[in-house]
Image (cartoon, rainbow, N blue to C red):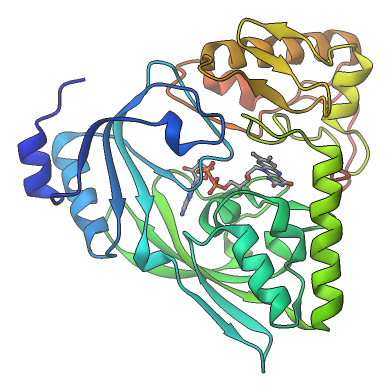
Length: 325
Ligand SMILES: Cc1cc2nc3c(=O)[nH]c(=O)nc-3n(C[C@H](O)[C@H](O)[C@H](O)COP(=O)(O)OP(=O)(O)OC[C@H]3O[C@@H](n4cnc5c(N)ncnc54)[C@H](O)[C@@H]3O)c2cc1C
């Protein structure tokens, strides 16, 4: 895609990068290039990005740590925005057990900081390698908790009109690994309500979670669990995949992890298309053999048919919570 670098820099600022590799910004470390990339260190620059995107009719994609994202080998024909310095503050208030955090703060950092301050309720996040902003949109969670458990409100910027407003957690449609926050809004910061705890016990919980993750989850290039558990707490995607004999299945440069069947690994220098091919195959076999049509938890960027992975069907209706992480 041809973009005029000079006019973009005039509209947005000198820190605009053109034809930037996205792979380096994601935990999958595969995929093509972003037509435009900008790391926004000052909040007021968001309005300029919004204006430029409107003027040039370019889509905008916010990226946190890219730990729940797979970018197509053909890249993203728009502006990729990463929040920087202005969204990286942590303000701990031990007396009323509350925390204000910028959206760019990594979850493991916030988990360790709150635990060290003797605040309990956010330890679960130590093993989730995303940012606070990405975690709100995904309602990230694990170990029996999630963002929804402590989120009081979030400050959101709207690309459509350049407005910023605080929205109560109850109005964000947080559900199992999702919310009603779409691409038109960016989380800038949050307020969390935690509980007073004992520092040693909070830190022991953190160490236990880190140990559990090392034992049960693979390292390398992946985006964590690929499919949402069809019936949280009851039917785990990993178990279905395993029962269908798909552990270790390989297509080209991607394979189902041999350590955790709901993780799909990419090889170094691998291709996003291979990851999607493994996803499609796994999903089809599981649907054929069990009747469960699984929804992708990973955000697919730049794939024209990505909506296919949003479809979800159960062989019977059921509810539940959590996924045994
Ligand atoms: C090894 C591993 C383990 C994982 N374990 C877990 C787990 O236990 N539980 C779990 O829930 N997830 C898990 N994940 C997935 C992932 O870490 C979470 O979904 C995380 O919340 C994503 O955050 P991120 O900043 O990386 O978001 P990204 O991957 O960068 O983006 C994800 C989505 O959020 C949007 N987004 C990002 N930042 C913002 C923002 N500031 N405002 C609005 N939208 C935004 C993006 O546009 C995209 O749609 C794991 C991933 C890995 C690699």
